[in-house]
Image 1 (spheres, rainbow, N blue to C red):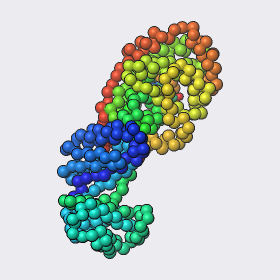
Image 2 (cartoon, rainbow, N blue to C red; image 1 turned 135 degrees about the vertical axis):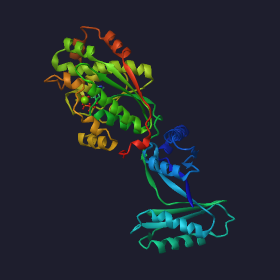
Image 3 (tube, rainbow, N blue to C red; image 1 turned 180 degrees about the vertical axis):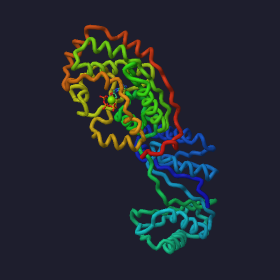
Image 4 (cartoon, protein in one colour; image 1 turned 90 degrees about the horizontal axis):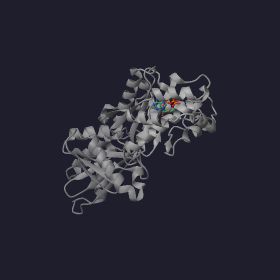
Length: 400
Ligand code: ATP
Ligand code: MG
């Protein structure tokens, strides 16, 4: 008996109509990439399910332990192969069920006899395996409809294949299936979590960070590097664009009254992001904004910020409570990096009394005294780009 095959169920993926084959292809490529450090895997993708095969049992163990972190998979089951005899199947069933918690659990056996020449008929196989398992695990209760443990046996020409355990997948969509977007990554708690939610929806990320030396120091930058590294551990490489933001920020402070500098600064960030977006093929901007969290995150404020761009701005956390965000940050391993006490450019320039209801006309009026175009162009051109290659997914233990 050996585990040399894994059955993968797509879940949401399989409901995607015409796009389905491209989603499935993407998932197959992502699995190949994720396990490129192992020996060659054979992946057979069918309409409703996928089979991963390898000759190495060690590699199979690795795949089983790392697969729960790959987006686009609803659940999967290791498949055990045995020789075509009732005795072999009985003993494999006992081993498989022995790995699970059986006390008080409902149970049934399902048999598919694809090999019509097999010497035993279906009822004999069902009875032989079922009674053997029930003797070995007296805590099991037989139940035909929706049992907790469903031992499936498939009799084929050369061997029998058995599955019992169903392992939960990460859900979501395969990374890359949703195109690419530009995440505004500060050093705070929210934006990395916002990035995680979009990765889970299959969106590949490009990162942008606004850096204002000497008001912010290298420690703040290091924090962002570490967050970028964490985000690369979800199965996709990321580029981080570091924008020299000091001149723009100082110009804003010179031109607009104190209580609307926050709004104006955000608008400058959006305009720079648009410049980077054009060069990177991203189709949207992502932020970590959450309604009502701070002065810059009221509807009036978001309205004034948004008016500066026609690019879709995605805010996956807009209706999320801070406590939920903290929970996710802990699960995905970004929390401890985000709470390091180094301030970013916004904290330092935060006015004492920012307007919670900035008027768009007023912001536009003050910004209108100078042209920010050149400074924006310069910020885009002088950016530093750092590539974070896709990290091996098993270095990332906390996810989900
Ligand atoms: P975060 O925890 O993500 O820093 P926050 O609650 O501190 O968010 P703000 O400081 O108002 O909120 O920032 C709102 C959003 O603007 C952030 O989630 C982020 O997407 C973006 N942002 C803010 N500062 C920067 C920065 N220095 N570089 C890149 N993006 C930034
Ligand atoms: Mg912040």
